[in-house]
Length: 109
Image (cartoon, rainbow, N blue to C red; front, side, top):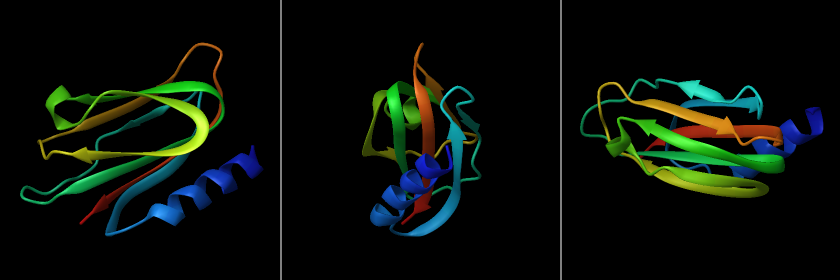
């Protein structure tokens, strides 16, 4: 898992822009469940990558904060714009049978 973690972090570093607000790496079966501190009037971008097999599901609460998406664990970086809401809850959950590591980063532009 350490190698997958390093690869996932390197993939995000390649697309990083703006000021980092929050970031992390989690196992697919643990998922990501976060409520980042966002400021009104700012634009944010979520970069998400999954290394491993299967896919993960990205969701936002409220749903209008971002676009729900299925993200394959194929090392492709997915970028989503986050619309400010107070608060925003972001979840990324692995599909049944999926395995690997998820890396994510929220940047303010």
